[in-house]
Every structure is written in C-alpha cells, then in structure tokens.
Length: 234
Ligand SMILES: C[S@@+](CC[C@H](N)C(=O)[O-])C[C@H]1O[C@@H](n2cnc3c(N)ncnc32)[C@H](O)[C@@H]1O
Image (cartoon, rainbow, N blue to C red):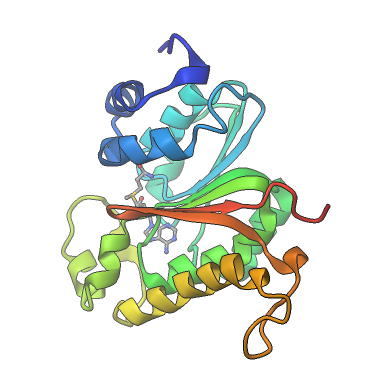
C-alpha cells in the first residue's frame, strides 16, 4: 500500500488505509487525522496498541508510520497468529496485569504513541494509563478508544454477548463499568493541566509548572487523546 504524501495525511487517506487493513478505526479517522498531525511524516516511531484482534490496526499503523516499530498485546492467543513481521512485537497477556504491562513497557518503551483499544473496562483504561504514562515520550500521545462503553453499567455482561470483536468474553472482570471512575480520571488530567497556573495551587494541590505532565486532552465522540508536554523535564 502506498500513501502519496505521508506528511499530509488527511481523514480520507486514513479511511482508505484503515479500510484496506480491515480495522474499524474508520469511525475515528477524522479525530486521528487531527490529533496525529505532529507525527505524520515521521519515521522510527514506537507505537504501542493494546488490543490486537486480527492485527488490522497494527498493520495500518505500519503503513502510516514507515520504518517504525509496532507493539501490541492482547489477552487472546489467536491474535499472535495474525502477524509475523520483524517490525511487530506482540505478546499475550491481560492488560489488567500491571506487572506484565510494566515489564513490557520497561523492555520495549518508551513509546511515542500508546493506544488503548483493549477491554474497554474503565478499570483497565485507568490502570493501564497510570502504568504506561511514564513510558510515553515527551510530546507523545495516549489514546483511549470506545469511551462510550463507560456509560454501560452492565458492560461486563454486554461484552460477554459480543460475537465480534472476538475475545471480549475472555475478560474475567466481574465489576460493572463505573462512569464516575472515568469522570474522576479525566478530572485528574484536567486538574494537572490547569492548576499550575496558580502559584500556590488550590487546597494544597500541585503548584509547579514542572508538575504539569499533560499539554492537553482532546475529546471526540467515543475517543480521547491525551498529549504529554513536549518540554517536560527540561
Ligand atoms: C476492539 S478489538 C481490537 C481491534 C484492533 N485494535 C483494531 O482496531 O483492529 C479489542 C481486543 O482487545 C482484546 N482484549 C479484551 N480484553 C483484554 C484485556 N483484558 N487485555 C488485553 N487485551 C484484551 C480482545 O481480545 C480484542 O482482540
């Protein structure tokens, strides 16, 4: 597959790559086209996506970000058979296993882009983020897909009945999705972005610019993008 100008990828081109690779990310093409602008045309990136299924999106990223290394994990062993290519590094484990996730990131990170398209359980979204954010490079982007699932209290049972994507029923989580947990999670990110504007902070919370980790959070229908500051640690 060839994309004419990798510096100027637009939603239409993304749709074409996503469609030919078979990923359902077509629904997010507009938002990916806007948010990934800083990375289009760049090479030698490290991209880690949780949730492989048949490898469609990992394949798509390898077409979009040439000469880059694509990482993935999935709970379902069938995913491993989907791709064999030296640019890919896949492992099988549950994203809820924080020790394994951290080991993976320790071995292969830091990454430029991390995408959570795994279980879509709030608990996993938040624990994976908290574990992996330290392994995201300055200026990197952390994406969480299918936020709509946070509105499904009974997502555990809904997921069991899904025939597609495969493997959602392998998830052992028994707890329901709690929307409030997701709201609290995003509020923490927002607070981190805004509060350093006030030198003494509020209620004793963080006060220094150096404590600010995130540049911005962008929200679109069913997906969020968290941008890490470029100048962090300078
Ligand atoms: C929506 S599919 C991923 C699709 C793929 N990223 C794409 O866009 O083509 C979700 C995947 O997450 C995997 N998954 C579900 N629960 C998981 C968990 N707890 N840890 C890791 N992967 C999980 C499923 O097996 C499934 O393959």
